[in-house]
Length: 516
Image 1: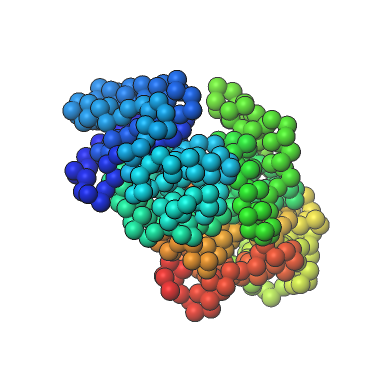
Image 2: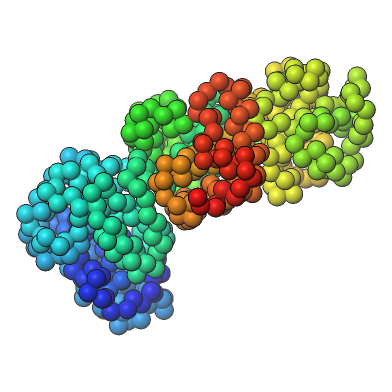
């Protein structure tokens, strides 16, 4: 049950008092709940009056439950219920000073609604759209007074998702966004302001996580469950990308991928995947259909069992590349695992060869450094080993099975899980984090929002352990740039082109969270 005990002050003349919500699905009902709890009178309208009545009854039930659990005083629950009513027609919204639409995500429907509302509401009424991916400017274009139209993008479930994007269209008055931001703060939520660009902040910044993971699985580097385990255990994400897509459902997430890609005129960074398109066509939408990237029983995912660590002898000796990332840390780790370490300039004829590239694939490192590819294995050390719950090794096409198994047995000998993936530039975590950071930097380059609002929106709206810029600072901008430049070399793909904003800060060793 939602717990919202925020007790707002009496609204000032500048604050919204008479509000309306159009659409009484999960989003519309959640918005109505927050408006009532913030002290506003709320008229809830739906084209289906029975649905609006049902939603209003559910909201009164929520407030009653909060009282039962001691999370809301009875007087406050009574006040909230008294402030909520169901409107029987759009004309009943004539006195509203704010109308929030939460209807179907179609441009023509939203334009038609706002055009109709202009003939009903007063000239001072603000029209706000809860669109997640459509242009606020395009929605407002159907109106005579575009200056009063703004975006007010909530996330589901509204009471629990503590961030709201406030979006100015091309003609939106700045004062309207200021008032809407204050309203959001009256909810007890965080307001982040964004320019009217595809995906705004959260859906734009979220492109790096799922899309890069889809590319990785599409290249045959690892399966869905392995990628999810790596990103949760190495980088600390609460849900892996495929778990997340199953939760949100592909009939929601794939159209957003396509929408943002096309709105950015086929920008390679946002390219959707044939994998999700096919699964959407086949009805494997995720948890709600019982089958997605995982199969579900009783609403719980059935995870494939990880293969056991090979029961083989540990390598007779280990040689570490002089160019390995975090080489001193890697040597200390090997010593703690009891591995005999070779210190010569070149490996002996029997040694396991360990490389730790940033961005490059193991094949390239073995070829350039003239190492025996059959004995060469890579390890991902973009992040400190002490900060992760899993190690990731990568083979190359020539790696011998005995060397692969010996390497896995060695690095798992202290009980830490080890995933072994096929060769790719940048491993899994390197590629995904570099994509997230690079897209975040590009958002700042476009002045979509401030660096502070970017990280706040991503941590609250997407639940990432760090915002894109905080991730970049933790890894080091120079290391992120090295991964991206090397990925460009490996793949020859413009999607790894570093943002100018990131390159400038990396060149000057500036914090990415520092504004211009």
